[in-house]
Amino acid sequence: MALCSMFCCVKSSNRKNQRIKESTWRIFSLRELQVATNNFNYDNKLGEGGFGSVYWGQLWDASQIAVKRLKSGSGKAETEFYVEVEILGRVRHKNLLSLRGYSSQGQERIVVSDYMTNLSLLSHLHGQHSAEFLLDWNRRMDLAIGAAEGIAYLHHFATPRIIHGNIKASNVLLDEDFKAKVSEFGFIKLVPEGAISAKGARGYLAPEYASSGKASAASDVYSFGVLLLELATGKRPLVKSSSTCALTIIDWAVPLARERKFSELVDPDLDGKYLEEEWRRVLFVGLICAHSQIEKRPTMLEVVELLKGDKEKVAALENDEMFKSIPGTEEASKYVVSEKVAKQESVNV
Image (cartoon, rainbow, N blue to C red; front, side, top):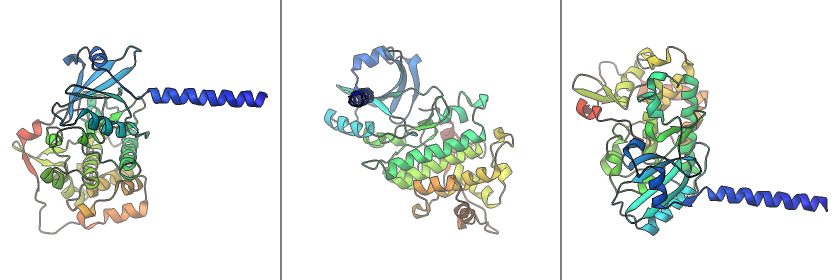
């Protein structure tokens, strides 16, 4: 009898926990989000990107939220938006930012998630928190592997499979323990076609994605490669090469990697406090991810394997044709952009 009572108690507790878990995903009213963000006040604005603007908000229970107000004219009917966002809402992984719900009233299309107190990787590498130097090498390595595992889950295990389409430093958020939370996955289905080419994505887009506008698993891998190079070098996706021009971080890094001039590549902010074997691993994996030939890029599952230290594969990677010096020739930049364009890179969320 006592056993039966205990069993019933456990079942009741499990049902309660299940209800609590389910209640975290819900439909928000537009009015509720207006109140939470002080009517989308500019002072609450965290950033702006290709998909729209993000605002900090606080609900009636004092919980903090991030409110993504998607660009108007998405072309998504309410039912279609509901179906797409429900799919994204079911995705759960320790390195993916879970959605809390959405709002769809009139022309408004809004997605709600938890607010990350440590903001984004971008803010710590190049933005408001960069001077504090909170990203030591151990944290960077952990972030690289965590973000890779999150994206690998989207590509290989989510149902249906999900292409991120907008991987960049501002979309890798950091929780209170500085663990990676990849955000905005799958949002390319929620916004107008071509929105991803807006400012903030320059330097991250794979050549074939930039020309066709079609995202793929391979273009995600390319963008992630750029992200790894940022972690290793501390440079932005576009690197100033003269007073008037800039190179992509890939075109800047490949010649130096070929000549093994690692001291010119490593982020000086690390102040020599890093494991060279791990640093080289991140560098070379980043470069092979951003290979101009699609078929040469690894899958995200292979990226995770490489980052975790498969020594045999990493050694083979360092000896890849891409990293062999070509006597008597110089690496020509494939993507030279004006300094004016480089300056348009801004802190986006």
